[in-house]
Amino acid sequence: MGFETCGPNEVMVVSGCCHSGSTFIPGGRVFVWPVIQKLQKLSLNTMTLQIESPNVYTQLGVAVSVTGIAQVKIQGSSKEMLESACELFLGKTNHDIERVALETLEGHQRAIMGNMTVEEIYKDRKKFSKAVFEVASSDLVNMGICVVSYTLKDIRDDKVGNTSTESHGYLKYLGMAQTATVKRDARMGEAEARMEAGIREANAEEKRLAARYSTDIDIAKSQRDFELKKAAYDMEIQTKKAQSDLAYDLQAAKTKQAIKEEDMQVKVIERTQQIQLQEQEITRRERELEATVRKPADAEKYRLEKIAEANRTRVILEAEAEAESIKVKGEAEAFAVEAKAKAEAEQMAKKADAWKDYQDAAMVDMILETLPKIAAEISAPLCQTSKITMVSSGKGDVGAAKLSGEVLTLMEKMPHVVENLTGINITKNIKAATRR
Image (tube, rainbow, N blue to C red; front, side):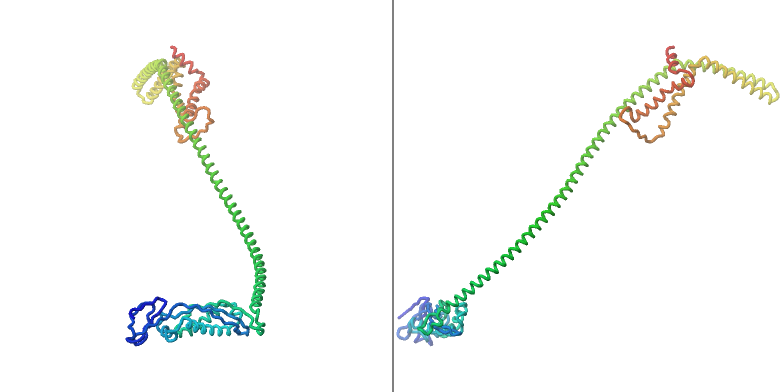
């Protein structure tokens, strides 16, 4: 003796000297004193048991045979269960342990079969297995044996001599009935399934049509919204295009108007230059007329006026002298008035003679002096005008050129008017005076 070892599937039991009780060593080593100590081993391997329960009468008196499979082992993790197992099985073989466990399980299996019907055992094997497992485990645990699992392997209704023919075929008929029930349920289920399928198909068709109609409605709404939006966009585009075209036309019209205004300004400038040239020509002619006609006439007129004024002065002085000689104031004043009137009459006669000699020249001179006044009177209303709106057809002058042209046209007609009123041809007389 010395050190002893064992595998994890065994337990060593040491008893004797130095131990108040048995010592259990599952899977390990221990020192054993020879003679004074004793070592025994107990297997912890799992044992598979086939439990046969033939011809057991169930709750309703139907005999059936049941085969169950159980897995059992001695529980090595619990000291209490090891103590119980050692007390019962130490020194015995595995066959003895299996027989004890098998008889216990077979008894509990028969008991459970007697409390259940064939239908329950046949249809609910899990319930049967659970019942056997629970009842057997409560007994075997007291022996230190643990039931690892239990499964119902088979259930049958075999013949037993000539006295058990009534129960023979029970499971077969039960199966046939079950099969018939299943077939019936299958047919009913198939019919119900077909009916439900038809209903579902109809519902699906209805939903499909509803979805289709809803989709068509949505498509129509979308089409309508698209058409409305497209129409609105088209209208907006056309509006913008029309505004753009109008803006372009307006800008083109403004450009054309500006060009026309520039042209008018050019024409106004040209007309103004023409007017200035005409005015310079008139000034030149006036100066020429003044040099050739007016100044000689003025000189002669001045000479005659001086002569007349001298005669008048002389008459007045003579009258005053005579008046002084007259004592009576009233007569003197009357005489002075008479003398003054005579002097003025004589002066006027002198003027008349002078005008008679220079009638045409004098008339031309008066008319030429009057023409600027007439032109001023004609254009006077224009000076008081703050704004003039003129409508033009595009032909002829416009603006200031038009107004200046109108004034000049009136001035050009004045010689004809003077000739019609006085019989004097101003143009002819000016040309005659120019030749002299």
